[in-house]
Length: 254
Image (cartoon, rainbow, N blue to C red; front, side, top):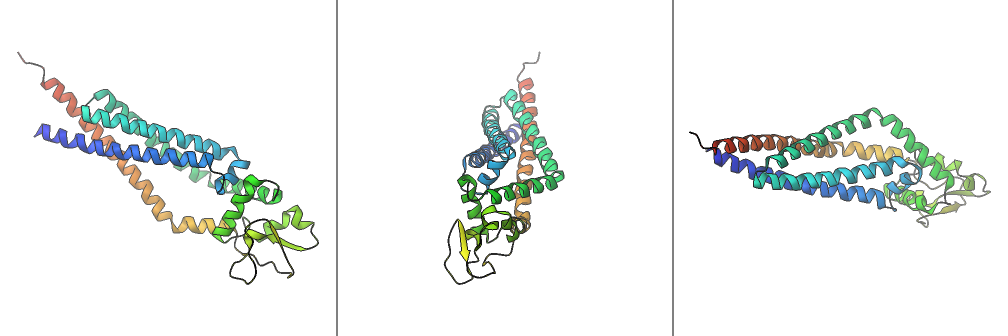
C-alpha cells in the first residue's frame, strides 16, 4: 500500500513538474517578447522607461528558473532523489513568495505606474513623428483599440507640429473609421472641417475597460498557477518524506 502511494505521488509530481517546465517556457518566451518586440505598446514604454526592460529581465530569469526547477523536479520525482526534491521545494517556495510580493507591490504602486505611463505616452505624443521606434507602436495601439491619445484626443494638441500648423491636423491612426473618408494608417493628417474626425475615447479608458472585462480570466490564471504551485510543494514534501522512510526501512535490523 505504501509503495503504491509513493508511486502515485511520484507520477503526479512528475506531471506537475512537466507543467512547470511548460509554464517556465511560456514566461521565458513572454520575457523575450517584451525585451525584443518593437511593434507594440511595449516598445513605446521601453523607449522612455527602464522599468519595462528590468521587468523583462526578471521575467526571463523567472522563466529560466521555473524551467530548471521543473527539470530538477522531474528527475527528483522519477528517481526519488531527496536533494533534488528539497531543491525543488525551496525554489517553488521562493517563486511563490516572489509572486505574492510582486502582486502586492503592483497593487500599492498602481497610482505611480499609471502616472508614469501617462507621462511616457504624453512624451511620445509631443515628439511624434520624430521617433520611429515609438511612432509605429502608438499608431498601432490607437488604430486597433479605436482610441486617441492617452486620456483623450486633447493630448495631441500638445504636439508642436499640430499646435504650430495653420491647418487642422490630427493623428491619422486616431481617425474614426465609422466616418466617411480616406483612412491613413500613420502620420499626421489634415482635414478641412474644424472638427477632427477622430475617436473621442482615450487609450487609457480603453485599456482599463479591457482589464476590467478580462479581470476574471487574469485572476483565474493567477489562482490556477498558485494552486499548482501549492500542490507541487505538498507532493514534493510527501514524496521526500516517504523516500526517507523507505531508505530507513531498507536498513537490516538485528
